[in-house]
Length: 226
Image 1 (cartoon, rainbow, N blue to C red):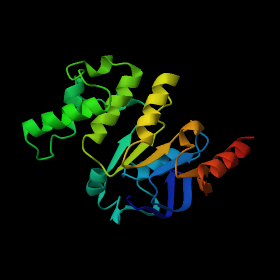
Image 2 (cartoon, rainbow, N blue to C red):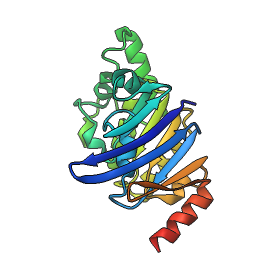
Image 3 (cartoon, one colour):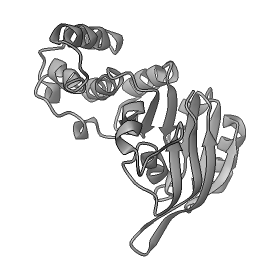
C-alpha cells in the first residue's frame, strides 16, 4: 500500500478555518473518513491528490509532495466525486473511459482492449456506445469508477460515492470499493459501508477527533452526534 502523510496540515478558505494541525499517516488498505457536514472531511480527502492544497503543512503520497509534484501524485491517486456527472466528459461510455488513457502512450488497440476489459469489470459490458449521460445513476457512478480505474492508480479516493444512489446501487458500488486491490480512502455518511474497513478517522470541526478501528471510531462518532 502507498504511504499518505499529513504533516501539520491546516487549511483556510479566507478567514474560515477548515482544517487545523492534521497529523496522519495512512498505510492501510481500506480507510474511512467520517464527519458532519462542514467538518473538513472532504477537504482532507481532496488534498490527497492535490485538488486542494494545504494552507500550511505538507501532504505527501509515497514521499511525493502534492503541492510541488501534483502531476506525479495524480498518476498514483484516482478521485471519485459524489456526483458522477461532474466527471463524465465524453458523449459515450467507451469514449469516456478511453479519454483517461489519451496520454498514456498506449496504442489504439491497447486502449481499446483496456477499455473493454474495464467496462466488463465494472458491469458496463455492452454499453460502450451508450450515451453516457443517459445512464442510470448507479451506472453513471460505475462509469466514473471505471474511467478512473482504467489508468490503474495505486490509490482511490472516493468522496461520498453512494450519497446520490438508491439502496441497491449504493450496495453495488460499496461492494466494488470494498473489494478493490488498490488502497481505498472513502469519505462517507454511510457508516455500514465502513464496518469491514481497516481504519476509520473521525473529523470534527477541522480536527482529528478519533482514529481507530471501525467499531470504536463509529461508536465515538455516533456518540458525538448524540
